[in-house]
Structure formats: structure tokens, C-alpha cells
Image (cartoon, rainbow, N blue to C red; front, side, top):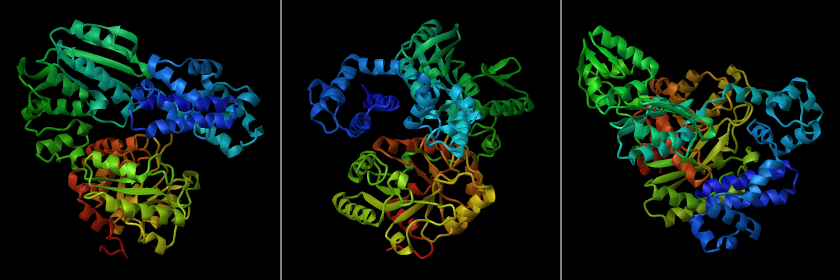
Length: 576
């Protein structure tokens, strides 16, 4: 059983206990156990089998028994009974920004509110204002959060949808009845948000393939079943469609069902001009099928180079393919090192050494530590003594790890007036800095633009972190003149971050072209708060590819010495 799944259960138990008003330390015990589990390298099933879990710090006898029950039986009676005692609507309320466990308990105990609908009505009637800890601003924030939940209903983050698709595709690939299969639609185009899952398979036995699909363990409901198409609902409520075609039809169907709709429409128009017809069944000249074995063959018919799925948004890719100007998009293997990593010094789960080992295991040559600065008190921001201790530790580790470099960095809060933490002397201790907006998101466009530009003009700022502040399916980007930001970044040698956290994916891929044309360079960074977060770099690469970026546009494709020289080129900084 996956340790992250078990940790999620433990965290959920702690949250439910808080909502029920249990002793805080009881909840904390579950949170601590979940954290210990996330950091654990040993196999959880072996620990349970050998009765060694209770010997690990963070696991008392009671929690060890519960984890053992969960691992060995797949269920936990205590958890199931606890869920029955806490109205499900209270757990849903936790998705609303600003509604933590204490506030959820407050509205439940004082106002009898147990659903999001009741909470919305209470906000409209200003009933939350009577509760301790709730003011007018908090109530308005809660109301906006509820409205956002409704706006984003039926939409899913790419990693979640892709993880489900991969499980089903793995089952299909193992079947002798399936010749070829792939995800299609927005998943294959690597859109950051998807509404459903499209799958495609080729087979001579569609009935067997449909049976395999509709009976998959992830399926909770079969909404339709046919010979060529079946539709289901998967765990979590996301819909999935599978289309089965002959292997001869597969290339045409894969192109068609990958889309986008706009790309397909534009290509049909080009085909019509050339006396051809293209659809999911083939490319035709009159009634004659032009045989294609791959998608590359389809594009070749129109005198085009291959267009990667990520680019198929009718954003100039067809014209570029006709002229042979499709860029060689950046790939995962191009990334040499990782920046924007948080450690246990601030709000990360892992130590610097643990993170360094994880990066080395993944084949990276360097990593850049960037814990929060002191203004970020809410995230354990570093004071001067913390910085000194951290830098001493990094020096020791750099001596220990041959051929791997740990860069000293910090993530600076861009304060409302555009200033940043620490004076020039302290900032000179760092190899690089990332400056990010974490507060005061409601400024008007002019003030926010002025704020960020002031920070970028500081000689010690190397990187602009998550430039628009968006949280996908949760918070809209703040208002900012993004073209002015790009212009200033190019002038000031400030690198634009593509934040790879799947809840951010900021810079939006739709802006990448404009930023590149303005002369900007980019950093694909995971914003990792634990070891597993390092792997989020994959999602940032998706963004860069959709944004037409190549290896040369991204600075962490450089080697160790080159990246150090680049980070040192800001005004007033000289590379050693």
C-alpha cells in the first residue's frame, strides 16, 4: 500500500478530530505520524510485517496498530466510524480558502451549518460576523471561495487525471486484445486543467477491450457501453471515454481525438483547399484513403513537419510546420539541476541532505535551496541566525558530495511597497534569490505592476517566482501588466520562473511566447516542499513545451559552472 495514501488517511483523521473539538495533541499525533511516514524510506509493508513501526519516532502503539490494520486489511474501522461522525459537508468546507478546522467547527457548533450551501447563505445574511475570528473581510473571502468552488466544479488538475489514465492504460497495454493505446484529448495535449479523460485503443476484439475498460477497479459507474465507444465515471467523479478502432484507423483517430477542436478545424480547412478531406477515419482524396501508419505520415501529406501534441492549440503551429519551423521543444532529459526547493528550515518536510541525495538519485548535477525569508513568518521564514546555520550546513554538504553542488538561495517576499527582506550585506551571502508575491493580492493593476517591477530592479534579485500568483481551481491571477513585467525582466536580467507545482503552473503557457519574444529567459522549478515534489518538474516541462520553449530558453539546462556565472551577472555581483 502506498505510504502517501496512508499519510493522507492519518492527516484526514487529525483534521476530523480537530473539527470534533478533540484535544489538539491528539490531532497533532496523527499529523506527526503522517509527516514521519512521508519522510520514511523503508517499505511500510515490511515495517508492519516485522512489527517495527512502533519503534519509529512519531508512531505510538495506538497509531502503529491502526496503520497495521490499514496495511494488512486495506481498511481502518476507526477511520470509517470517525467519518460517519463528521458530516461530509464539513470536510468539503476545508477546500474553501480561509476555512481551517477551527473555523469549520465554529460555524458548525455555533450556527449549525453543515454544508457549503448553508455556509453561503449564512455569508449572504452576514451571520458569520457574529462569530469570534470572523470579520467582514473573512466573510467576504469565504463567500468568494465558495463561488470559486462552484466555478471550478467538474474540472481536475492534470496530474490527478493523468494518474488515473495511466492505470487504465497499463491494464490495456497488458491485454493481448490491444495493439496500440494512448491518452488523447486535453490530457495528451498536457493542458493544466482537464474536464474528462479521453482514451484510444486499436484492436480486432473491441468487445474484449470494452469489457476490460468497464470492469476496471477504478470505474464506479458505467454510463454507456458500445462496440466502439464506452463511457464511465471513475473514482473522484471524473468521466472517462474509451474509443476502440482498427489499427489501420488508429493514426487518424489519435490525431482527431487529441485535438484541439480549433487545431482540427484549421487543418480541415487546409485539407479542403488542397482538395482533400481529413477526419477521424482517415485522409481522403475523393473516396480514396491515403494510407498513414503514424501521425507523422498525416502531417507529411500536407507538407508539414510533425507537430507535438502539446502545440496543437491553433496557435500558429500549422503555419510553422508548413515552413519547417516547429521548435525542438525542451525535454525532461535537458534539465541539469533544480532550483526552488524548501527544506525543514522553513516549511519543507525534508533536510537539505535528504533533498540532495534525492536530486543525485534523479541524475541532477545541482540544486538551489530557497527557503522563505523572514517576512514569511507564516511559513517559518529564516532570520539571520537561521541563514548562517543553513549556509554552514550547505558548506559541509558541498564538501561531502563530490560532483554535486548545492546553491545557497532564499525566496524573498515582495512586500506591498515592492521592498524585500534583508539588507544588501545579508543578500550578498546568497548565490541566488527568488522574489515572489505571497500577500496583498488585491492591489489594482498599476500598483501591483509597480510593486513587482521595483523588486525586480533590486540588484540582488535573480528570479521572479510564480509571476501571476494564480492557484489553479482556487485563486485567479492577480492583476498585473504582464508585458511590462517581461520587458523589465529582460532589461534587469531577471529570470522568469515556470513554477511546476501542479496547483500553480505559473507562468501560464499562454504567456511563454510573449515572454520569449521580449527577451526573457526561464527557470523550470518544482517549488518542492518534500522529496516527491522534485518530480513536479515534469509538469513545468509540460508548460514550457506548450509555450514553444526550447532547451536554450531554460537556464537550468546549463551545467553547474554556467548556471553559477549566470546567477552572478546581476548588477553589483561578480562571479568568482
